[in-house]
Length: 363
Ligand SMILES: Cc1cc2nc3c(=O)[nH]c(=O)nc-3n(C[C@H](O)[C@H](O)[C@H](O)COP(=O)(O)OP(=O)(O)OC[C@H]3O[C@@H](n4cnc5c(N)ncnc54)[C@H](O)[C@@H]3O)c2cc1C
Picture: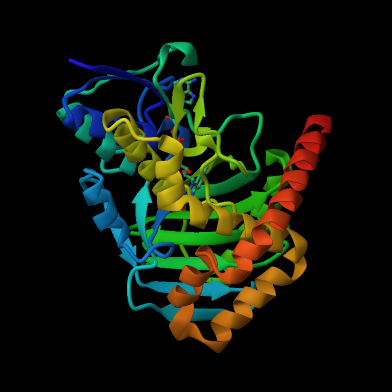
């Protein structure tokens, strides 16, 4: 029987493990933490449903990933600039809210159980090295991160809500903050780009203040959540004969950091590449290459016009709430303009990433 070793039992590593096991491989996954999802401390994350015409859950199903985890479809979104709040009703779910972490019914535990049911061996508290592995799925590295989120999770009696806060004092460099509540469980977070974790605390403080002024919400048993995210302009998909998946490869939406979908797609495609002897880079390029490039252009435009970007998005919402999903789809997919602009945007964002590393190293 063929064997495969995977480093990291996150969403991309488990997506690969499930698919290898389905094809009869003997699969070993080595995870440095004591359980799946431990890096996530129980926050809520959105499985985005706007960057493709395919429904994300159907897409997962086609990649042999079952929905044995809890998820809440959100067809309503509130958007605020910190003063005004606009409610939008959407025709289809904008995202499916899932829990991350080691708790029962989280996405991480759902994928873990699917892998175990297929006979995958998961070795926790492992110190295995990359050199002994076939697939590297270790998520973002601690050294080179660009996205930093700070927030809290809590219990609540409040109704389900998804509130997007677009305010430059609440999130750095044109990023965003949010309140998410589903089934008595909530999160308030500030997402920031190009700053350090220490700097992110002040943005979270402002996020908390603005959100609790905008929404009447009870917060009980709160705990801190947060983390980092990595993206690369040119994903690192193959090195020394090993395939990289998810954020270890730098696969991430450069605009807003919605990386779960790409992570699971890359795990699936890594498997396909090995089993069908196909070129992994070509498979990734075909499936998500255009969206990745578009997100570089989106990142550049946000970097360049970060003072105005929140107002710009908020004005779109105010003027035309009915077309929000169509607008997002267009922003996340290539246009003639984004294709022409991509080479320039790539250079500018690369320069920004390099200077961001230098700044972080000197702080
Ligand atoms: C606070 C926060 C909020 C987010 N919100 C969203 C959201 O709403 N929507 C969205 O789509 N994305 C979101 N993301 C991003 C998303 O979580 C990631 O893009 C996605 O989890 C990446 O999957 P992955 O498989 O690459 O890595 P992970 O899921 O992080 O898995 C990596 C695994 O590898 C393990 N590991 C690391 N190093 C080693 C090693 N040396 N040996 C063994 N194991 C190792 C880790 O412990 C971890 O279990 C968010 C991220 C953060 C931090």
